[in-house]
Length: 604
Image 1: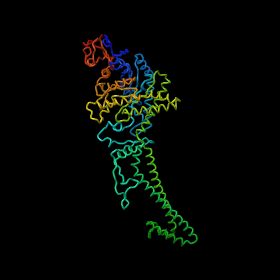
Image 2: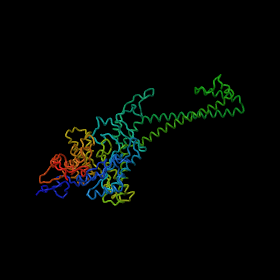
Image 3: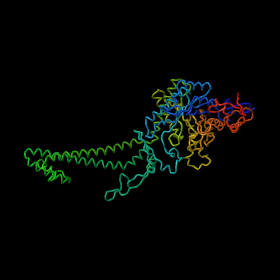
Image 4: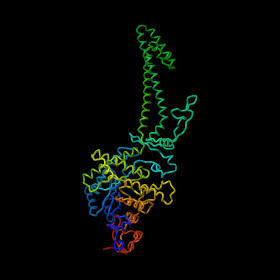
């Protein structure tokens, strides 16, 4: 007799059976998320009544946000945490946790650039989620969003383009390694370059540059790539500012030369003044005439009026003591000298500051990835300590999630980089701080830092897919190729399932959009994936529909009371003569709803 032809079976049956495994995904894997804007205890009760064995507790708010606007992990005290834990335990429910979705990226990116304060605020949100997960879930995955910095679509992958000629127009983002400030240069911005280059420019007979040519930022970028420059950002900035630096260097040298010339003049005037004062002691008249003659010579050489003119009130004073005016000229010359040296010093300092700034320029990906991996490693150390101190039954796993297509971390390859770099940073900390062997540290890091792969988020890349793909098969093939690589490299440790039509992350029920959910789940389970698959509610009309649609899409077994097999379409369309799914089986507040027969007679 066929196993599935017995008189009664339901979606919670998990008896080890070959036919059952071939039918679809076991409910051991399928999980559902709570609504982040609702009370988690009530949400957990509702999910238990919906028939799942796994639930992800979700948060969205940060800081001291009012509980009415979405609770934070810290707003659940010890008693509530214990109540959540006991409720899950007695119902044999396994819990995972989602860190507040509104927290900024762990790189510390903000509108002002990369900020240590912003990074610490984000890390704080993750830490208090870790504490909550340790108390309530007693381990398990902790999903945390990645939204590390903005970047053009084509930089994420050659298959994508956000708009026509994006590669030629999109800005190149750079970051100052010291300050965290971000600069953006449009790739189509043009720089004036002298014919022959800055080193040996071609000049005309008058000494001016013969011809200026235009060069786009994108051309500098291509040059750097061809030359295999390690720091493309620095190469571009050096090329762009080379003209300004060269001209500034010339101007600084000219100013320094002028200052030295004025200094020599001041020294000469000072010597003459001393001689005149000495001569004045023995021959005042001769000293007087020599002083007036010296002032006239200076006026001729400098073409400046240095002595009072005839008929002015000061002229009499000048005739009485011309040496005094030599002294005034000396003081004035010294002031001009000081100003000239100050200008030369400022010009040189500006050159050095600009050069220093150029040396501090770093590609934004390198900078942000270092910041992100360090923050995740610090969070993993904190989770590791919580795990040991509270003697948890299972590890606390930090699971960065691919989120927005517009931000770094949203592409599978970027997610992989975040995971691999974070594992390196974490294992290094374990060796240094916990004195664990390198091999053991690497093993611990691989177990406790894994990716949350969201198939709905990946599907949003569909809107930028460049190839002509009316059926969507080419895009789905790309998704599966990326999943293959992530699976091969042991990156995925947690899964989120939701659907959309490839434009926005709207979270409609699984199977109701065009995300390759079944294809994705089949692939990872075939490759041995053992983590949870969280079906996330959101954009569908009713919360209860998300689970039934997930079961249907993934081919999971359903409730049945006779020997005749029923499809999920039949169940969704009519159950005991009623339209829609039965609310006493699934639903947010199922326990509080009255159960009625098909005749709508109340059950007394």
